[in-house]
Amino acid sequence: MRAYLPMLVLGLLPALPGAAVSGVVAGIDPQSDVDDGPPVQEAAAAYGPAAGASNTELNNSWGVTRIFADQAHARGINGAGITVAILDTGIDYTHPELAASYIGGYDFVFNDNDPFDDNFLSHGTHMAGIIAAKENGVGMVGVAPGAKILAVKVLDGAGFGMAEWTISGIQWAVAHGANIINMSLTGQDSPELKDACDAARRAGVLLVAAAGNGYPGGDPVEVDYPAAYDSVIAVTATDSANRHADFAAYGPKLELAAPGADIYSTVRGGYDTISGTSEAAAFVTGAAALYLQSNTQDLNNDSLVDSEDVRLLMQRTAGDLGTPGRDASFGYGLLNAGAVPEPSTAWLLIAAGTSLSGWIVARRRKR
Image 1 (cartoon, rainbow, N blue to C red):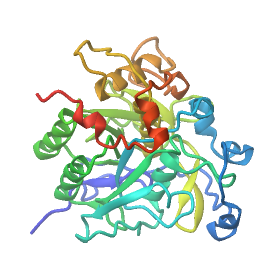
Image 2: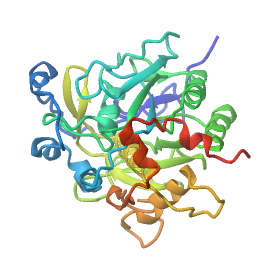
Image 3: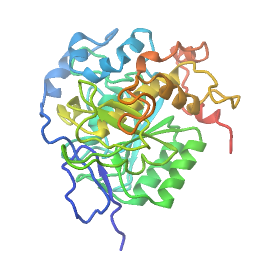
Image 4: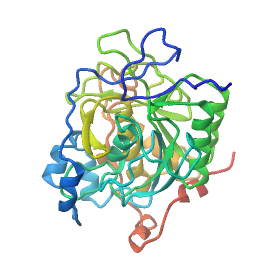
């Protein structure tokens, strides 16, 4: 009999102490407001080409402006040519904000090619909107509206999944050209999961994961897995005042902080406001797409300009919060997408329709 992996989406009700899924804390800030927003059926009629995000979109996307992603968009840097795999509860790929970005996926829960989001909070769809919702004049806008999305369903409708689903999802994403893998979920440590994350990193894929959630005002929560692996960027959450969110994890494994409190994004049938380190991880994933599109330097002196350099650049450009330097509350600091450098001529090939999907992977040195 196969046991459920203690993997939960981070945007659901908090796990109770002593629950069967031992070692796991997952949840949202229960004090956060829930706002259904304009339904998709009403917004769809207004959708059409847009040169940039509207005031409405930016007003609804406080996290996008807080990390200065709108400044990158104004310079033509929107994640175009980058493929992001979202390992989650699936995605509503029919949503007008996401349909044009969706390029396929797989459902490891039911073993088929239809990774539609059946979660009661539309958790995976919420992540997808933060990452890549379109600039179309309504709703909200993602951090990387030009990025493409692979939906990899590794969690069921209740937000649970087994180890083999997550591991298979990582391997599938690498094989299908993902440049970045977003994992807004937590679980227990396992050698097989660590090996899958390490192998993806060696293949040149950037991995981002939520650090974990606890009860607001409760005991501090340590960074959970897979975020705690060295091959993964561990992300904690901040609120609109740049404070460490009261539900978010602490610990020396934290690498970056990003907006995670009261985040408005896409769900099935419309939009919703949810809080969690899940949302924060999605912001980092979107920003990573912007950095990958751009021309970074060989920061680690390995004669390559690749995902490892992007990770270092995000660390170095983060806005320091709390104790000077890297700390257990914010890692290196608040994500700064406005520091994305200008794209090189090579990256501008995407304007002519050249796909860069898998290109970062191809440039990685085999180790």
